[in-house]
Length: 184
Image (cartoon, rainbow, N blue to C red; front, side, top):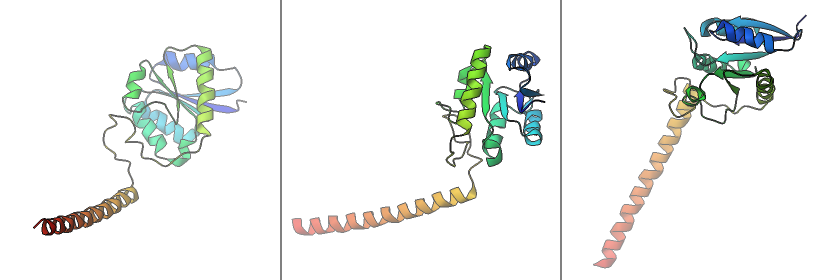
């Protein structure tokens, strides 16, 4: 029986079959999903040991699936290999170096796939800092995943800074008044 479940989320049957054929025989149970919604459902139901995720998918993009995974601490620890024919598509949303997943550019060879899987497993073991994923990268869009606690903490910092600015303005006014009196 296969000891590891690998979920391949790609709309191309060719890629899904290619990944299946490149993996060492007998060690892996390869699960497949042809779009992002099906893939996310499979992640939640099957809890795979590794996810291979295409960045461009129908119904729900690989970017949206990635955001869902990063938004749930129980899913973040699953090693992830992001796949795309164009690295630029990924770096538009997620800046390099890729901290939480490994990237592999299509088409790839078996050696590249095995190396990407090993690197993804190593990255998955690294400790995580809490951070909002919607703000990752230069053109990431809105920060919809920022929690209300984070917003409140930022508002408190803003209020404190505004108080400090007001105090500095008052002191500057007093200093100017003092200088004007001395110049008379």
